[in-house]
Length: 105
Image 1 (cartoon, rainbow, N blue to C red):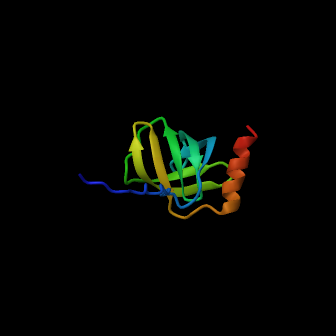
Image 2 (cartoon, rainbow, N blue to C red):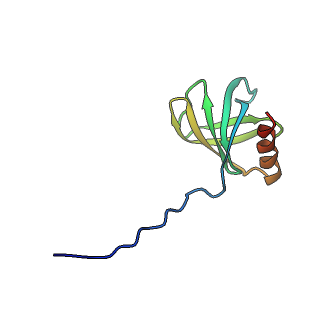
Image 3 (spheres, one colour):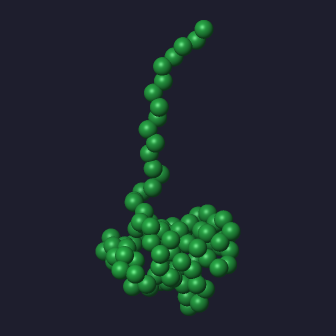
């Protein structure tokens, strides 16, 4: 008979920064004509609900309220939901302003 004690591994998050659940309208594309909804955000990226499917590996222009255009890479996409990573992290002030904007709605 074999007996051994084990210690469960601690689960650590892969996230570099905390994410905030949010619900804000945004636009995709240089003109922002393709609409989407930001459903969570961090200084490094967003999760979007879209009306047209995005493809993993593509770069998009994302028009965020109060911030304007940012470039992001689609890291994963599943039907009409996608996770995107910003080319340049958002300033913490901009992140906090977006989160505060959502709380007021």
